[in-house]
Image 1 (cartoon, rainbow, N blue to C red):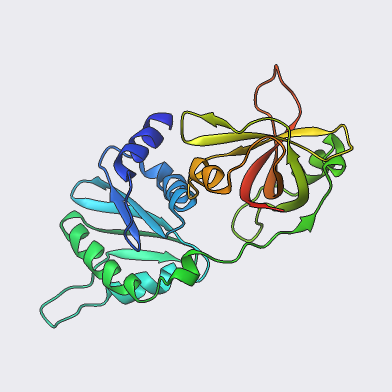
Image 2: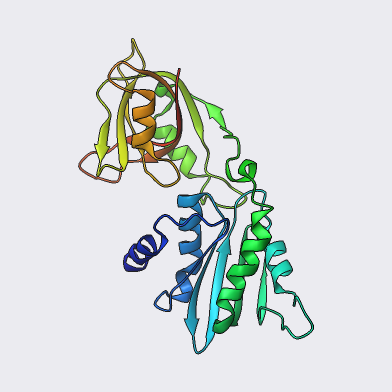
Length: 250
């Protein structure tokens, strides 16, 4: 799995098409849905990921709110002329996830038709939806017992979105730490309180280092943060941390 995800990162690069379509015969059919979800998470665009076997392409797609992926496949499937043939040998799914098979030699035709279909439908409003937070919390609310209760709502995914929380007026108690020049780590606390917590910004759809530079963040800056609550993965440093979704000056 890790090898395939690394290959996906190398293939994706700075791909900015309206609907991203990637294919590689080395990718395993069993992980195509996971790979498509990763592309959507990183780019904020619908994504289709395919592999090839015995002259046929097998694909899985994931979408974003406002773009009905099954409707898109239904539209591009239909022949555009009497001499043309239907695009897929089989396909199905729903608004957010699809699967299909097709002859491998029609892969470029899929790209062309999806490009034409998506260019007028994937508007800036769809690709940058307003952020919806599920609750506003204080740092003191972020206890282990609260996190344990939160995990009982898993698994998160389509139809059960992972909660996003908002905490206002937090102070940076140390300079912004940059990780591999792409990600950030903030140390935050509430003035007058002893509770401190780390907030991590992973550069998928947001260029966090650029955001921090633009906002001139430094020790003492006052910020509002939107985040997902996570458990630390390093057993030597147990506890909770924030996964940044958005950030603004208070």
